[in-house]
Length: 161
Ligand SMILES: Nc1ncnc2c1ncn2[C@@H]1O[C@H](COP(=O)(O)OP(=O)(O)O)[C@@H](O)[C@H]1O
Ligand SMILES: [Mg+2]
Image (tube, rainbow, N blue to C red; front, side, top):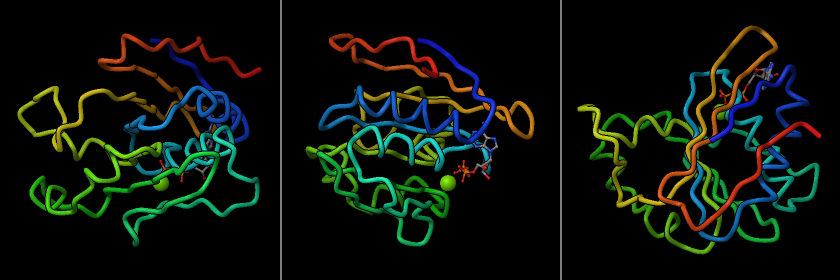
């Protein structure tokens, strides 16, 4: 699907907010991108779009693994940064969250994919929205949004309006 380039963290928040408004209970958003790409910034915008009151403190759940926020629906913000193997991730019981009725947003989704270029993530994840973030320069980031196996849903072409 579409891609879009933001020129500041503020623009990324606006994009995230528009994107968040399109999400529904049970949706899984997989974020890909290096440290500093903008995964957490985008997540902040998504949370706003899902009705989380502005001012709620949203940060990478690097030490807690998972943060839960209560927007109009539960939001689970998961950070796999510290996970060292597929087996470790599989031992967490994340399925309960991922296949529940909240929206799940995963940072470091690269770690859900076996290294042999298998296009399917582990944990039985099938329908998902993949967002790949590329660092263009200090203030610009590109976002490529690709829903996978979500043919029944339509997403707009995101703009920064
Ligand atoms: N266009 C942009 N979109 C998002 N973040 C940006 C942008 N330009 C600069 N930044 C900066 O990049 C950093 C992104 O950090 P963060 O969202 O925590 O990334 P990640 O969670 O991927 O490690 C922040 O310091 C932010 O201010
Ligand atoms: Mg982060």
